[in-house]
Length: 276
Image 1 (cartoon, one colour):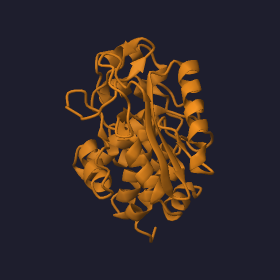
Image 2 (cartoon, helix red, strand yellow):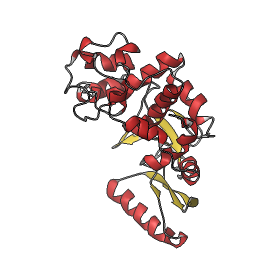
Image 3 (cartoon, one colour):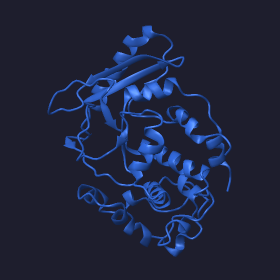
């Protein structure tokens, strides 16, 4: 890749769909329609709170919160409410890997074992590209019981991947597509190994800070985070710990700012999508 990938990161919001519901509106007069749609969806899906950003012709025309991001405190949601974005964090993991590719520290077609030598022998043909594109055949750790019990106990990445390493590949690498969270936990470990930095530190120094994403950070419930929304799973509060390729927080206002300044960028995507 000849184009600086850091510059291309401004196109990320154009590539991802988020629970913050970024919409393209035809005119600012459609605010009422957006309000009605959001409130209907909140009622239908039992959503306690959400923040919405409407971007039109590269300009933010609506940044608004609905409901409550914290049911215990009954604080109203705003455009600055910070939400956990779950697997959307994978986009930042992929961006971090491609930054390291540009620096010549990682090769997309390098075997996984080059960076994680303790990988099972059955993974010898799995490459970095396979992990990025969900074509590795490695089993998703969320499909192995008792995943949710482990999550509650704040299992580490190594603990979550321990059982995965004992399972056979679900298909030969590169022959099929199969979504697997394990792929991105492994990429997070590669980032830490190659950069000699913690995953969250690398993202902060190389992505969040350069792009002035001041309301974006990795999930850690031990930290004091202004405007943070509480996560809910049904009637229960969700919890997690900081770990490689886990989850990030992001505010709607940040997302709208990125979307309104995004520009077409193809070099990183073309390199990643090139057949191995």
